[in-house]
Image (cartoon, rainbow, N blue to C red; front, side):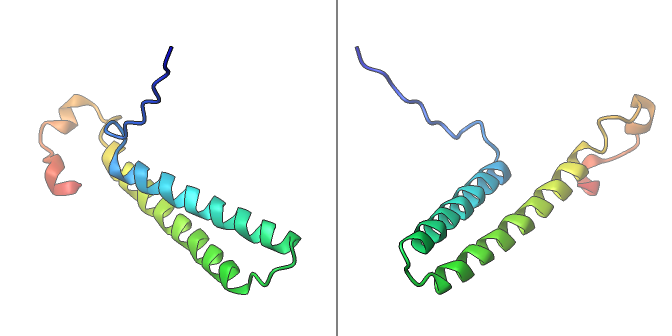
Length: 91
């Protein structure tokens, strides 16, 4: 009996994939810094890279939040208001 692991990212939007990868990189760098601190290695440069990755995660979160806000603004409007709005010009 074989078990298949299906890792298809075709259903994930690119912006969510960017967020996922950013989080994974930040968590990995944090784990490296913590392990390095416990084994008494100089982690100064890695700490700077980890801090930069957290800055990048924050920027990508803000970007995704703004993007989702612009895309979802029309979902709660009544149909009579949506007839005269061209969504492509606003998004």
